[in-house]
Length: 380
Image (cartoon, rainbow, N blue to C red; front, side, top):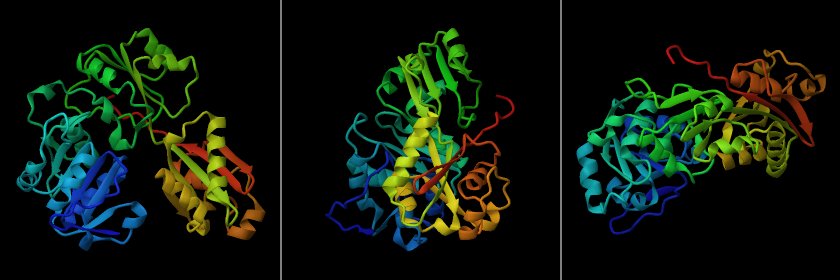
């Protein structure tokens, strides 16, 4: 559905994320789509004449008319606006909408080549400056921040790992933990999984922020606040570390799914939930669902992946058969041309031979579970 922008009429938008990405040029559209892939919680809006045909599937919203007429709807709806339009034009378009710094969203501008990300207008939680750093890191651009208060160059708690798709478990402690970071208290970053290259500043991490891979090591540091990155469901005892802490879910879980034709979304979702609970994994850390090409139009699978916003990947049988698996099945091969579906699909996506769950069959569904392993880069 295309939004028709008409003078005097406030358009109806489908707001789902916290950030809106807006583009009106061919190159801007490419940048918007790239950023949307790398930044969870973002909605994309661009002109219909640049449609690529997959907008409905990717939940991208098209519009016709002057983009200026779109902003009255975006301003009150989003925490931040990421606009790929010239800075001067953006300033003129948003000027009539400004109220005060406690209400206005953060506004960030990207140039048409994607070389600079400029903090234009600070907003409420997070603010444009922190958003600028995350967006610049996501598209490998240069951040431009002019406010003196940002010389601290520390961790933006509410946007931590956003460019990787990390999501927090609860927002309850965002404000007190952010205060601890700003006040340079002892901060423990406990990271059990996820991308390690989250420090984006051009200076060394300050000594009050320490990285750990285990809870007991962090406890010895006696932190005043904690940023915990893990795909695991924490035990009751482990949760005590989060008294003043935020738990982040990195997108590292990959599900391999095989199913009978016509299997309902409800059954598929139930098997996924049950399996992740058995493994003590968080469903919020799922990144992708993988299967065979024959299932690329399976409505149950499509419905589940759409519901959760998971990537949906399918491989041809010939490619699946190139992967060594533990229990090849002649029966599966007879019907699909592949000796396995869920297990080799996960291994192809993760690039790893080791799986958290090799294979489990439940009703009409077969499921395998793998984890994306990120090697620590040199110098950290």
